[in-house]
Image (cartoon, rainbow, N blue to C red; front, side, top):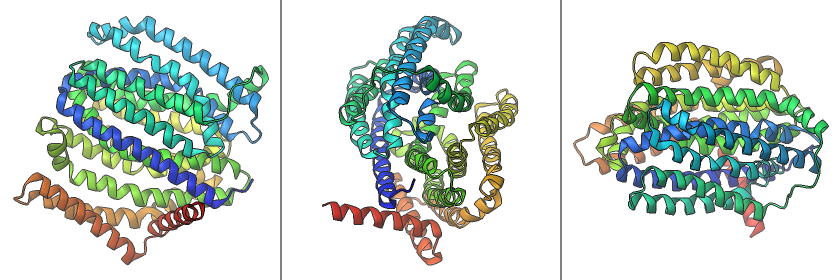
Length: 484
Protein backbone atom coordinates (compact mmCIF):
# COMPACT_ATOMS: atom_id res chain seq x y z
CA UNK A 1 0.00 0.00 0.00
CA UNK A 2 1.47 3.34 -1.04
CA UNK A 3 1.28 6.40 1.15
CA UNK A 4 1.08 10.07 0.31
CA UNK A 5 4.42 11.56 1.38
CA UNK A 6 2.68 14.76 2.45
CA UNK A 7 0.34 12.76 4.70
CA UNK A 8 3.27 11.07 6.41
CA UNK A 9 5.05 14.41 6.85
CA UNK A 10 1.92 16.08 8.18
CA UNK A 11 1.32 13.32 10.72
CA UNK A 12 4.93 13.44 11.86
CA UNK A 13 4.73 17.22 12.43
CA UNK A 14 1.42 16.93 14.31
CA UNK A 15 2.84 14.17 16.50
CA UNK A 16 5.96 16.24 17.13
CA UNK A 17 3.90 19.31 18.05
CA UNK A 18 1.75 17.20 20.36
CA UNK A 19 4.74 15.69 22.13
CA UNK A 20 6.66 18.95 22.50
CA UNK A 21 3.50 20.77 23.61
CA UNK A 22 2.77 18.19 26.28
CA UNK A 23 6.37 17.91 27.41
CA UNK A 24 6.71 21.69 27.44
CA UNK A 25 3.81 22.02 29.87
CA UNK A 26 5.12 19.10 31.93
CA UNK A 27 8.56 20.72 32.02
CA UNK A 28 7.18 24.00 33.39
CA UNK A 29 5.11 22.15 35.99
CA UNK A 30 8.10 20.05 37.06
CA UNK A 31 10.10 23.23 37.67
CA UNK A 32 7.34 24.74 39.82
CA UNK A 33 6.83 21.52 41.80
CA UNK A 34 10.57 20.96 42.28
CA UNK A 35 10.79 24.40 43.88
CA UNK A 36 7.80 23.75 46.16
CA UNK A 37 8.30 20.12 47.19
CA UNK A 38 11.23 18.53 48.97
CA UNK A 39 13.40 15.82 47.43
CA UNK A 40 12.00 13.06 49.67
CA UNK A 41 8.45 13.66 48.35
CA UNK A 42 9.73 13.37 44.79
CA UNK A 43 11.46 10.13 45.69
CA UNK A 44 8.23 8.64 47.04
CA UNK A 45 6.24 9.52 43.91
CA UNK A 46 9.04 8.17 41.69
CA UNK A 47 8.80 4.85 43.51
CA UNK A 48 5.02 4.57 42.99
CA UNK A 49 5.32 5.58 39.34
CA UNK A 50 7.83 2.80 38.75
CA UNK A 51 5.32 0.21 39.97
CA UNK A 52 2.44 1.50 37.81
CA UNK A 53 4.77 1.78 34.79
CA UNK A 54 5.58 -1.92 35.01
CA UNK A 55 1.89 -2.87 35.24
CA UNK A 56 1.10 -0.50 32.35
CA UNK A 57 3.04 -2.81 30.03
CA UNK A 58 0.36 -5.49 30.49
CA UNK A 59 -2.36 -3.02 29.45
CA UNK A 60 -1.37 -3.27 25.80
CA UNK A 61 -0.34 -6.95 25.88
CA UNK A 62 1.44 -6.27 22.57
CA UNK A 63 -1.98 -6.28 20.88
CA UNK A 64 -1.95 -2.61 19.92
CA UNK A 65 1.18 -3.18 17.86
CA UNK A 66 -0.37 -6.37 16.45
CA UNK A 67 -3.37 -4.37 15.19
CA UNK A 68 -1.07 -1.82 13.53
CA UNK A 69 1.10 -4.48 11.91
CA UNK A 70 -1.79 -6.65 10.66
CA UNK A 71 -2.55 -5.88 7.00
CA UNK A 72 -6.31 -6.44 7.12
CA UNK A 73 -7.35 -5.51 10.69
CA UNK A 74 -11.10 -4.81 10.93
CA UNK A 75 -13.74 -3.90 13.55
CA UNK A 76 -13.88 -7.46 14.89
CA UNK A 77 -10.13 -7.33 15.60
CA UNK A 78 -10.38 -3.92 17.28
CA UNK A 79 -13.42 -4.86 19.37
CA UNK A 80 -11.90 -8.17 20.44
CA UNK A 81 -8.73 -6.46 21.63
CA UNK A 82 -10.73 -3.70 23.35
CA UNK A 83 -12.74 -6.12 25.53
CA UNK A 84 -9.73 -8.30 26.26
CA UNK A 85 -7.56 -5.33 27.24
CA UNK A 86 -10.22 -3.85 29.49
CA UNK A 87 -10.61 -7.17 31.33
CA UNK A 88 -6.83 -7.34 31.76
CA UNK A 89 -6.75 -3.77 33.12
CA UNK A 90 -9.44 -4.53 35.72
CA UNK A 91 -7.58 -7.65 36.83
CA UNK A 92 -4.31 -5.73 37.12
CA UNK A 93 -5.91 -3.00 39.20
CA UNK A 94 -7.41 -5.58 41.55
CA UNK A 95 -3.98 -7.18 41.91
CA UNK A 96 -2.38 -3.80 42.66
CA UNK A 97 -5.12 -2.90 45.15
CA UNK A 98 -4.65 -6.14 47.10
CA UNK A 99 -0.84 -6.07 47.08
CA UNK A 100 -0.46 -2.35 47.92
CA UNK A 101 0.16 -3.02 51.66
CA UNK A 102 2.85 -5.57 50.77
CA UNK A 103 4.59 -3.12 48.42
CA UNK A 104 4.47 -0.35 51.03
CA UNK A 105 5.75 -2.73 53.71
CA UNK A 106 8.65 -3.88 51.53
CA UNK A 107 9.86 -0.27 51.29
CA UNK A 108 8.91 0.44 54.92
CA UNK A 109 6.58 3.24 53.87
CA UNK A 110 3.15 2.06 55.04
CA UNK A 111 1.71 5.54 54.42
CA UNK A 112 1.87 5.10 50.64
CA UNK A 113 -0.65 2.21 50.57
CA UNK A 114 -3.68 4.44 49.80
CA UNK A 115 -1.63 6.45 47.28
CA UNK A 116 -0.73 3.29 45.36
CA UNK A 117 -4.37 2.23 45.30
CA UNK A 118 -5.61 5.58 44.02
CA UNK A 119 -2.85 6.09 41.46
CA UNK A 120 -3.49 2.57 40.15
CA UNK A 121 -6.82 3.79 38.73
CA UNK A 122 -4.71 4.91 35.74
CA UNK A 123 -4.69 1.22 34.70
CA UNK A 124 -8.51 1.24 34.32
CA UNK A 125 -8.41 4.49 32.36
CA UNK A 126 -5.79 3.02 30.05
CA UNK A 127 -8.16 0.17 29.26
CA UNK A 128 -10.50 2.66 27.59
CA UNK A 129 -7.76 4.53 25.78
CA UNK A 130 -5.39 1.90 24.44
CA UNK A 131 -7.31 0.76 21.35
CA UNK A 132 -8.13 4.34 20.41
CA UNK A 133 -4.37 4.90 20.39
CA UNK A 134 -3.86 1.93 18.06
CA UNK A 135 -6.64 3.16 15.75
CA UNK A 136 -5.10 6.65 15.56
CA UNK A 137 -1.64 5.23 14.84
CA UNK A 138 -2.75 2.73 12.20
CA UNK A 139 -4.82 5.33 10.33
CA UNK A 140 -2.29 8.16 10.78
CA UNK A 141 -4.67 10.51 12.60
CA UNK A 142 -2.10 12.13 14.86
CA UNK A 143 -3.79 15.53 14.74
CA UNK A 144 -6.32 13.95 17.16
CA UNK A 145 -3.52 13.30 19.62
CA UNK A 146 -2.51 16.95 19.64
CA UNK A 147 -5.79 18.22 21.09
CA UNK A 148 -6.33 15.26 23.43
CA UNK A 149 -2.86 15.32 24.95
CA UNK A 150 -2.65 19.08 25.27
CA UNK A 151 -6.08 19.26 26.94
CA UNK A 152 -5.12 16.60 29.47
CA UNK A 153 -1.69 18.02 30.18
CA UNK A 154 -2.81 21.61 30.73
CA UNK A 155 -5.72 20.61 33.00
CA UNK A 156 -3.47 18.27 35.01
CA UNK A 157 -0.85 21.02 35.34
CA UNK A 158 -3.36 23.34 37.00
CA UNK A 159 -4.52 20.58 39.37
CA UNK A 160 -0.98 19.48 40.26
CA UNK A 161 0.31 22.97 41.02
CA UNK A 162 -2.81 23.91 43.01
CA UNK A 163 -2.57 20.77 45.18
CA UNK A 164 1.16 21.28 45.73
CA UNK A 165 0.62 24.90 46.84
CA UNK A 166 -2.13 23.72 49.21
CA UNK A 167 0.27 21.25 50.79
CA UNK A 168 -1.08 17.94 49.46
CA UNK A 169 2.46 16.72 48.64
CA UNK A 170 2.47 13.21 47.20
CA UNK A 171 -1.30 13.32 46.57
CA UNK A 172 -0.89 16.35 44.33
CA UNK A 173 1.57 14.59 42.05
CA UNK A 174 -0.60 11.46 42.03
CA UNK A 175 -3.83 13.24 41.09
CA UNK A 176 -1.99 15.20 38.42
CA UNK A 177 -1.31 11.92 36.57
CA UNK A 178 -4.90 10.69 36.99
CA UNK A 179 -6.43 13.94 35.71
CA UNK A 180 -4.02 13.96 32.75
CA UNK A 181 -5.00 10.45 31.64
CA UNK A 182 -8.73 11.03 32.23
CA UNK A 183 -9.04 14.25 30.21
CA UNK A 184 -6.78 12.84 27.49
CA UNK A 185 -8.99 9.75 27.17
CA UNK A 186 -12.28 11.70 27.14
CA UNK A 187 -11.10 14.04 24.36
CA UNK A 188 -9.76 11.13 22.32
CA UNK A 189 -13.10 9.32 22.56
CA UNK A 190 -14.95 12.47 21.51
CA UNK A 191 -12.73 13.13 18.48
CA UNK A 192 -11.99 9.60 17.19
CA UNK A 193 -14.98 7.97 15.48
CA UNK A 194 -14.17 4.32 16.25
CA UNK A 195 -16.39 2.58 18.82
CA UNK A 196 -16.30 -1.06 19.96
CA UNK A 197 -18.88 -3.36 18.40
CA UNK A 198 -20.70 -6.20 20.12
CA UNK A 199 -18.24 -8.68 18.64
CA UNK A 200 -15.54 -10.93 20.05
CA UNK A 201 -13.49 -13.62 18.34
CA UNK A 202 -11.24 -16.01 20.22
CA UNK A 203 -9.67 -17.05 16.92
CA UNK A 204 -8.78 -13.43 16.07
CA UNK A 205 -7.44 -12.89 19.58
CA UNK A 206 -5.28 -16.00 19.33
CA UNK A 207 -3.90 -14.84 15.99
CA UNK A 208 -3.07 -11.37 17.29
CA UNK A 209 -1.55 -12.76 20.47
CA UNK A 210 0.75 -15.03 18.42
CA UNK A 211 2.45 -11.82 17.24
CA UNK A 212 1.76 -9.61 20.25
CA UNK A 213 2.85 -11.80 23.16
CA UNK A 214 6.46 -11.62 22.04
CA UNK A 215 6.27 -7.83 22.04
CA UNK A 216 4.64 -7.99 25.48
CA UNK A 217 7.53 -10.03 26.85
CA UNK A 218 9.98 -7.66 25.16
CA UNK A 219 8.26 -4.55 26.55
CA UNK A 220 8.03 -6.12 30.00
CA UNK A 221 11.72 -6.95 29.99
CA UNK A 222 12.57 -3.44 28.83
CA UNK A 223 10.32 -1.67 31.34
CA UNK A 224 11.31 -3.81 34.32
CA UNK A 225 14.91 -3.36 33.31
CA UNK A 226 14.64 0.44 32.98
CA UNK A 227 12.71 0.78 36.23
CA UNK A 228 14.68 -1.78 38.24
CA UNK A 229 17.38 0.71 39.11
CA UNK A 230 14.86 3.03 40.73
CA UNK A 231 13.33 0.13 42.65
CA UNK A 232 16.79 -0.87 43.91
CA UNK A 233 17.74 2.71 44.77
CA UNK A 234 14.43 3.16 46.62
CA UNK A 235 15.15 0.04 48.69
CA UNK A 236 18.91 0.19 49.17
CA UNK A 237 19.57 3.94 49.25
CA UNK A 238 17.73 7.06 50.46
CA UNK A 239 14.64 8.86 49.10
CA UNK A 240 16.86 11.82 48.22
CA UNK A 241 19.23 9.58 46.23
CA UNK A 242 16.25 8.32 44.27
CA UNK A 243 14.97 11.88 43.76
CA UNK A 244 18.33 13.11 42.37
CA UNK A 245 18.60 10.08 40.09
CA UNK A 246 15.02 10.53 38.90
CA UNK A 247 15.40 14.28 38.32
CA UNK A 248 18.63 13.75 36.37
CA UNK A 249 16.74 11.30 34.19
CA UNK A 250 13.67 13.52 33.78
CA UNK A 251 14.94 16.32 31.53
CA UNK A 252 16.81 14.30 28.88
CA UNK A 253 13.95 11.79 28.97
CA UNK A 254 11.41 14.55 28.21
CA UNK A 255 13.30 15.73 25.14
CA UNK A 256 14.03 12.24 23.88
CA UNK A 257 10.50 10.98 24.49
CA UNK A 258 9.05 13.82 22.42
CA UNK A 259 11.24 13.08 19.40
CA UNK A 260 11.19 9.30 19.73
CA UNK A 261 7.42 9.11 20.17
CA UNK A 262 6.89 11.33 17.12
CA UNK A 263 9.11 9.23 14.87
CA UNK A 264 8.27 5.86 16.44
CA UNK A 265 4.47 6.24 16.27
CA UNK A 266 4.53 7.35 12.62
CA UNK A 267 7.41 5.18 11.42
CA UNK A 268 6.02 1.82 12.61
CA UNK A 269 2.63 2.01 10.82
CA UNK A 270 4.27 3.43 7.68
CA UNK A 271 6.90 0.67 7.67
CA UNK A 272 4.20 -1.94 8.31
CA UNK A 273 2.37 -0.86 5.16
CA UNK A 274 5.60 -1.17 3.18
CA UNK A 275 6.73 -4.43 4.82
CA UNK A 276 6.87 -6.31 1.48
CA UNK A 277 9.35 -3.80 0.03
CA UNK A 278 12.55 -4.22 2.04
CA UNK A 279 14.45 -1.61 0.07
CA UNK A 280 11.82 0.99 0.97
CA UNK A 281 11.96 -0.10 4.62
CA UNK A 282 15.75 0.28 4.57
CA UNK A 283 15.48 3.77 3.10
CA UNK A 284 13.00 4.79 5.81
CA UNK A 285 15.22 3.29 8.52
CA UNK A 286 18.24 5.19 7.24
CA UNK A 287 16.40 8.50 6.99
CA UNK A 288 14.90 8.06 10.46
CA UNK A 289 18.34 7.43 11.99
CA UNK A 290 19.90 10.39 10.19
CA UNK A 291 17.17 12.92 10.94
CA UNK A 292 16.59 11.88 14.55
CA UNK A 293 20.33 11.82 15.28
CA UNK A 294 20.71 15.24 13.67
CA UNK A 295 18.07 16.63 16.04
CA UNK A 296 18.78 14.61 19.19
CA UNK A 297 22.56 14.66 19.48
CA UNK A 298 22.96 18.47 19.75
CA UNK A 299 20.09 18.59 22.25
CA UNK A 300 21.65 15.93 24.46
CA UNK A 301 25.21 17.27 24.23
CA UNK A 302 24.00 20.83 24.77
CA UNK A 303 21.91 19.83 27.79
CA UNK A 304 24.85 17.91 29.28
CA UNK A 305 27.17 20.90 28.76
CA UNK A 306 24.71 23.27 30.50
CA UNK A 307 23.74 20.88 33.33
CA UNK A 308 24.76 22.99 36.34
CA UNK A 309 23.45 26.24 34.86
CA UNK A 310 20.05 24.73 34.05
CA UNK A 311 19.58 23.01 37.40
CA UNK A 312 20.75 25.98 39.48
CA UNK A 313 18.62 28.49 37.60
CA UNK A 314 15.43 26.45 37.18
CA UNK A 315 15.07 24.28 40.28
CA UNK A 316 17.61 25.81 42.72
CA UNK A 317 20.93 24.57 44.04
CA UNK A 318 19.32 21.92 46.27
CA UNK A 319 19.07 19.76 43.12
CA UNK A 320 22.70 20.19 41.95
CA UNK A 321 23.63 16.57 42.83
CA UNK A 322 21.35 15.60 39.91
CA UNK A 323 23.76 17.20 37.40
CA UNK A 324 25.95 14.09 37.14
CA UNK A 325 22.96 11.86 36.43
CA UNK A 326 21.64 14.35 33.89
CA UNK A 327 24.91 14.15 31.93
CA UNK A 328 24.99 10.36 32.04
CA UNK A 329 21.42 10.07 30.78
CA UNK A 330 22.02 12.63 28.03
CA UNK A 331 24.75 10.44 26.54
CA UNK A 332 22.62 7.33 27.09
CA UNK A 333 19.65 8.77 25.21
CA UNK A 334 21.75 10.20 22.40
CA UNK A 335 22.10 6.65 21.01
CA UNK A 336 18.33 6.05 20.90
CA UNK A 337 17.82 6.87 17.19
CA UNK A 338 19.66 3.66 16.30
CA UNK A 339 17.63 1.70 18.85
CA UNK A 340 14.23 2.98 17.72
CA UNK A 341 14.67 2.82 13.95
CA UNK A 342 16.14 -0.69 13.94
CA UNK A 343 13.49 -2.10 16.27
CA UNK A 344 10.67 -0.51 14.25
CA UNK A 345 12.00 -2.14 11.09
CA UNK A 346 12.12 -5.54 12.79
CA UNK A 347 8.56 -5.18 14.11
CA UNK A 348 7.23 -3.94 10.78
CA UNK A 349 8.69 -6.97 9.00
CA UNK A 350 6.66 -9.18 11.35
CA UNK A 351 9.68 -10.53 13.24
CA UNK A 352 8.35 -10.19 16.79
CA UNK A 353 10.21 -13.42 17.61
CA UNK A 354 13.51 -11.78 16.71
CA UNK A 355 12.47 -8.65 18.62
CA UNK A 356 11.99 -10.73 21.79
CA UNK A 357 15.32 -12.53 21.38
CA UNK A 358 17.11 -9.18 21.10
CA UNK A 359 15.51 -7.99 24.36
CA UNK A 360 16.59 -11.15 26.18
CA UNK A 361 20.14 -10.77 24.90
CA UNK A 362 20.36 -7.07 25.84
CA UNK A 363 18.93 -7.61 29.30
CA UNK A 364 21.32 -10.46 29.99
CA UNK A 365 24.23 -8.10 29.32
CA UNK A 366 22.61 -5.33 31.34
CA UNK A 367 21.81 -7.59 34.28
CA UNK A 368 25.45 -8.47 34.76
CA UNK A 369 26.35 -4.76 34.79
CA UNK A 370 23.53 -3.96 37.23
CA UNK A 371 24.41 -6.75 39.67
CA UNK A 372 27.99 -5.49 39.81
CA UNK A 373 27.18 -1.76 40.09
CA UNK A 374 24.29 -1.86 42.59
CA UNK A 375 26.66 -2.69 45.45
CA UNK A 376 29.00 0.19 44.65
CA UNK A 377 26.92 3.37 44.46
CA UNK A 378 23.97 5.08 42.73
CA UNK A 379 26.46 6.78 40.40
CA UNK A 380 27.91 3.40 39.40
CA UNK A 381 24.40 2.16 38.59
CA UNK A 382 23.86 5.13 36.28
CA UNK A 383 27.18 4.52 34.49
CA UNK A 384 26.27 0.85 34.05
CA UNK A 385 23.10 1.93 32.23
CA UNK A 386 25.19 4.04 29.85
CA UNK A 387 27.47 1.09 29.07
CA UNK A 388 24.43 -1.14 28.59
CA UNK A 389 22.86 1.37 26.17
CA UNK A 390 25.99 1.47 24.01
CA UNK A 391 26.07 -2.33 23.86
CA UNK A 392 22.33 -2.52 23.14
CA UNK A 393 22.48 -0.33 20.05
CA UNK A 394 24.96 -2.75 18.50
CA UNK A 395 22.69 -5.69 19.35
CA UNK A 396 19.56 -3.96 17.99
CA UNK A 397 21.21 -3.17 14.67
CA UNK A 398 22.70 -6.63 14.13
CA UNK A 399 19.66 -8.41 12.53
CA UNK A 400 19.21 -5.64 9.93
CA UNK A 401 22.67 -6.43 8.59
CA UNK A 402 20.92 -9.36 6.88
CA UNK A 403 17.25 -8.31 6.86
CA UNK A 404 17.83 -4.91 5.24
CA UNK A 405 21.51 -5.07 4.24
CA UNK A 406 22.03 -2.10 6.59
CA UNK A 407 24.67 -2.91 9.21
CA UNK A 408 25.82 -1.12 12.35
CA UNK A 409 28.99 0.44 10.91
CA UNK A 410 27.03 1.84 7.98
CA UNK A 411 24.56 3.33 10.46
CA UNK A 412 27.37 4.89 12.50
CA UNK A 413 28.82 6.35 9.32
CA UNK A 414 25.44 7.94 8.56
CA UNK A 415 25.22 9.72 11.94
CA UNK A 416 28.91 10.58 12.43
CA UNK A 417 28.72 14.11 10.90
CA UNK A 418 25.95 15.06 13.36
CA UNK A 419 27.81 13.47 16.30
CA UNK A 420 31.12 15.19 15.49
CA UNK A 421 29.50 18.61 15.08
CA UNK A 422 27.51 18.14 18.31
CA UNK A 423 30.63 17.22 20.30
CA UNK A 424 32.54 20.23 18.95
CA UNK A 425 29.62 22.48 19.87
CA UNK A 426 29.37 20.89 23.34
CA UNK A 427 33.03 21.55 24.16
CA UNK A 428 32.69 25.25 23.39
CA UNK A 429 29.41 25.53 25.31
CA UNK A 430 30.79 23.72 28.37
CA UNK A 431 33.74 26.08 28.86
CA UNK A 432 31.44 29.09 28.78
CA UNK A 433 30.22 27.88 32.18
CA UNK A 434 33.45 29.17 33.76
CA UNK A 435 32.90 32.79 32.76
CA UNK A 436 32.52 35.16 35.77
CA UNK A 437 28.93 36.10 34.87
CA UNK A 438 25.47 35.62 36.45
CA UNK A 439 23.99 32.15 35.88
CA UNK A 440 21.13 33.39 33.69
CA UNK A 441 23.56 35.29 31.45
CA UNK A 442 25.83 32.24 31.13
CA UNK A 443 22.90 29.96 30.24
CA UNK A 444 21.59 32.36 27.58
CA UNK A 445 25.10 32.67 26.14
CA UNK A 446 25.53 28.89 26.13
CA UNK A 447 22.23 28.29 24.32
CA UNK A 448 22.76 31.01 21.69
CA UNK A 449 26.35 29.94 21.05
CA UNK A 450 25.40 26.27 20.77
CA UNK A 451 22.56 26.92 18.32
CA UNK A 452 24.73 29.24 16.19
CA UNK A 453 27.63 26.76 15.98
CA UNK A 454 25.39 23.82 15.11
CA UNK A 455 23.28 25.61 12.50
CA UNK A 456 26.26 27.25 10.78
CA UNK A 457 28.13 23.94 10.79
CA UNK A 458 25.10 22.15 9.33
CA UNK A 459 24.90 24.59 6.45
CA UNK A 460 28.65 24.77 5.89
CA UNK A 461 29.20 20.99 5.85
CA UNK A 462 25.84 20.24 4.15
CA UNK A 463 24.77 17.66 6.72
CA UNK A 464 22.32 15.12 5.27
CA UNK A 465 20.18 15.16 8.40
CA UNK A 466 19.77 18.93 8.08
CA UNK A 467 18.77 18.69 4.42
CA UNK A 468 16.21 15.94 5.14
CA UNK A 469 14.75 17.88 8.07
CA UNK A 470 14.39 21.04 6.01
CA UNK A 471 12.66 19.00 3.31
CA UNK A 472 10.15 17.68 5.87
CA UNK A 473 9.45 21.18 7.22
CA UNK A 474 9.03 22.69 3.74
CA UNK A 475 6.61 19.90 2.80
CA UNK A 476 4.49 20.54 5.90
CA UNK A 477 4.44 24.32 5.36
CA UNK A 478 3.51 23.86 1.70
CA UNK A 479 0.59 21.62 2.64
CA UNK A 480 -0.50 24.05 5.36
CA UNK A 481 -0.59 26.95 2.87
CA UNK A 482 -2.69 24.89 0.45
CA UNK A 483 -5.13 24.00 3.22
CA UNK A 484 -5.44 27.63 4.38
